[in-house]
Image (cartoon, rainbow, N blue to C red; front, side):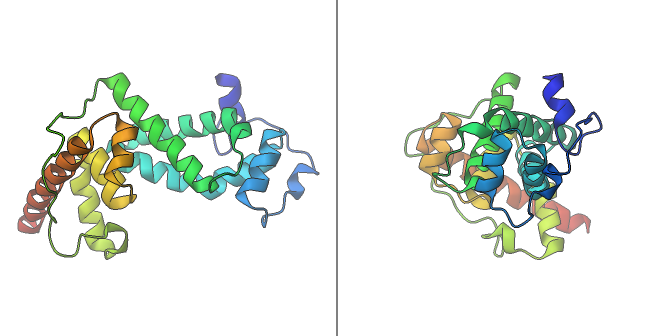
Length: 210
């Protein structure tokens, strides 16, 4: 493990010596090309992948955990896993999709180790309703409103936060969320419904304070 961490780009422990040839990795390379070079031991290519995607990975970890320290640790673990598994990427899907799945799985595995469980409900679940007007597409919200929403999301229970992040922010369907989280579609729908209701109250509280 320590040997891998030492070689991860951007980490203080990194001590790898990059050759002149490795430094010539073109910035116009596709993710697939960089992944293939990384699998062959090209550390400069792996660093390019890291620089392209580390913020996205960290942001997803932060939204799902609501903890800066946990997100930092998990983001690092994602890239350790990426380093180990990069040779299994075949280009059958977009690299971002593959890395996104790897990240989500890493966070969910972290939740399982902590004993976080999805609340079980009937298969039909509850019909999700919208929180408040303007939050139906979080990624397109004004910055100030988005900051308020992110603060509220961080206060959600882990199960609610996970489903809300995967569905409303990352765009996954309930069937896919159910497979990833190991729960029923009804549970996913119910978690989303309750997350939205909880967020509505949290956002109202923030508005009152302001």
